Amino acid sequence: MPKYQPISVPVPLKASVSDLVDFRWGTAGISADFIIPGNNTHLLRVAFDRQCIVRLLDEMPLSTENDDGPTAGLVSENFAYIVEGSVFSRIQSDAWKIALPSATHYRFVTGWACMDVLSSSVPSFVLVARSSVDEVQAAARVLDRDGRFHGWWPKTTAAYDDLDPIGKDEFESVVERMLMAAARTRNG
Image (tube, rainbow, N blue to C red; front, side, top):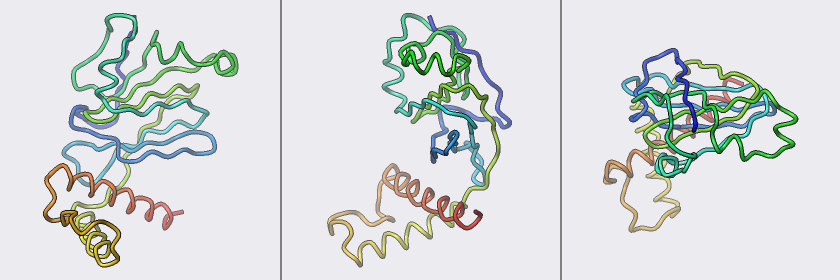
């Protein structure tokens, strides 16, 4: 039976309305940026500075995963956990377990995407600047206009301003990741 131990994060974060917006592999670790509901100016960056095994998945498959019975310690709307006794941790290779016997299973839960991390390092949490809604929407309109001009998508595709709320959110998510990548390049 898996046991969940909640981890505190530096900002209030309602897990069911958060989402993963960016994920990066590094030479010795990973970082992932999550939406902070109600905060349009910052994201919460979770980072590990050592080798990791990572699993990213939609929340729905996670909720159907058979983890050998009931769970203990889950807290409504909690975002971050240490997980003991999970199938995910147990199924990793013997080589991994020998090389990193102190690896811990961490789980980060949102309403859309979940991230499992096995690592011998502890996560760090930091707030990072986020593009404003106006910046994202302005860039989305430029991408939509120029994409139509160059014929990058079918003529039957709805214009950005005509997309349904989910389509608009997904388009803006792509644009926001583009703006984040540009900012990382500019800032070194």
